[in-house]
Figure 1 (cartoon, rainbow, N blue to C red):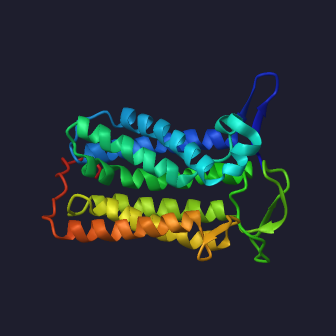
Figure 2 (figure 1 turned 90 degrees about the horizontal axis):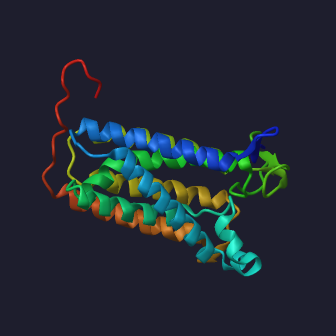
Figure 3 (figure 1 turned 180 degrees about the vertical axis):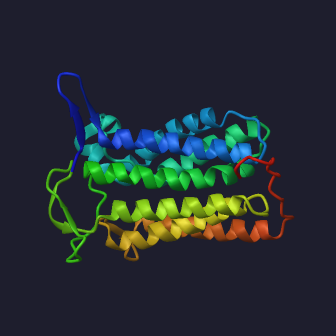
Length: 259
C-alpha cells in the first residue's frame, strides 16, 4: 500500500488526498460535459468545486457523529485527520450545495442534481481508489478468495487477506456513472436520473456493507446500510414521481460534435 508519496527533500503527498483531487477534477469534467450537452451556460467547474468543499466538510462531520469514540479519544484533531470520511455525509452536504447553486443559477435544484448524478457516481468510484491505496480501514472482512488482500502498511494495517471492498465500490461507482450519463442523453423527466442514482448507489452500498468491517447497530445492519435503505426508498419515490411528469427530450447536438 502507498498511504503517502514521498518526494525526497521536497514534499509528501497523501494518496487519499491525491485521489480525492482527481475525483473532483473528473466530476467537474463530467458535469461540464453534461451542461454543454444540455445547452446550459453556467460555471460547472466552480459549482463542483464548491460542492466538493462542502461535501468534504459534511463527510468529516458525519464521520465524527457516526464514531463519537474517535472524537472522545483524539478531540478536535480528528477534523484534520486524512482518514475518516463518511460518504453519506458528503452526499447530503454536497446535494445541499448543488441545490442552492442550481437555484441561484436558475437551472433548478432538481435538474442540477440530475446533471450532477453521473459525476457523483464516477467521483465516488475514483475516490475509493484513494481508500485502497492508503489502506485507511475501508476494506472488508477476512476472506479466502484468491483476490483477498492484506494491508500491512496501510494507515489502519491488517495482516490477513480481506475483501478489497474499495475496489468493488470503485467498479460499481464507475459503472453506475456510465449508465447514468448514457441515460441522461435519452428522453427523461426531471428528477429521473437523480432517482436512479439514489436507487443504484443505495443498493450497491447496502450490499457491500455485508462484507465490510463496519459495526452493526440495528437489526444486524450498519449505519451505512440503514442510510442506504433511506436512499433506495427516496430513489424509488423520485422515480415514481418523475414517471408521472412529462419527459424532456435531450437538446439536439450540432453536426460534427460528440453527444
